[in-house]
Amino acid sequence: AKPTMEVRCSIEVTSQLVETQEASLDYLVGSTDILLDKNIISKILDIQKLKENDRQHVFALLDAFLKQTKLQSIL
Image (cartoon, rainbow, N blue to C red; front, side):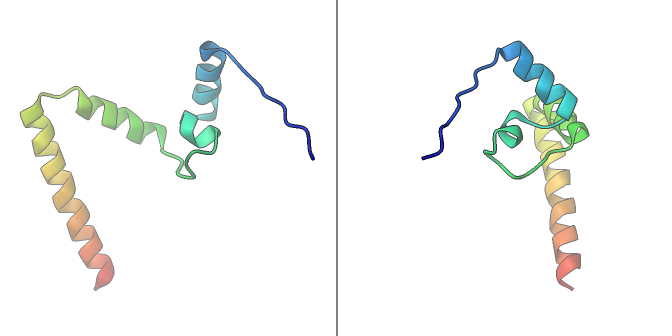
């Protein structure tokens, strides 16, 4: 059997790694294969800070755009 090595690092080091690699912790540890763009993550965080009513408007616009884009790709 191949020996395994457990590596533990501080939150600070992990945070720096995530920042320099511009990838989420989930991506770096293999929990997901989706690499999110740093700009997208920033926008999501900004949306989350909005008032609930404003957030619902943003989601409605985004949903409409995504539906239109999906329909166009089918046609």
